[in-house]
Length: 222
Picture 1 (cartoon, rainbow, N blue to C red):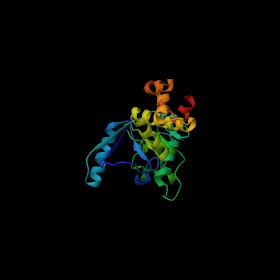
Picture 2 (cartoon, rainbow, N blue to C red; picture 1 turned 90 degrees about the vertical axis):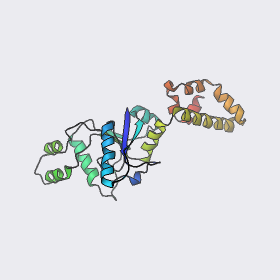
Picture 3 (cartoon, rainbow, N blue to C red; picture 1 turned 45 degrees about the vertical axis):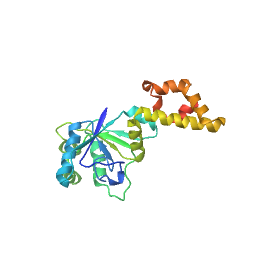
């Protein structure tokens, strides 16, 4: 799928420390599969700050491919509005900065209505049931967000979006250096071995997806 991030300012590296701490899924880099929502987010930022322009960043994303890049990632997915989602959102919205964040690297789910705090107070005071609380904080329109909550998740996202040719070039460089070390051969001889191998043919074919694997794993195959 394609993911979008709406902002009113241009930036280089993504700094999680600069992200607001009390959003639905915690302090994270937020994206959405709904481009119109990203545009709206950028417009809201312009209205609040009185500066900037609408900027929408686009990323490729696939859960299976991201997991291939980093199998250790912890992922939480909420397919729809439910009691667990509501309680998770409230935990993150009310979490104090000094308190630890949740354990997940990536969280996917619906967006909560910003008017939810008044509803939460009623729920906390036992004036409404959880089912009614969930109904009140639900947007009428379809919403979607994926939050990248850790540096590891961001690394996987950015690695997945790096042009394949750059990844392949980097892998070839790593394989060559390793061959030089293990076989005590020259750089030219090492690169010749890589380029004449079946592994290089598979790397060059993006459909195999081999370039998404860690170079250490590819070296074992070589």
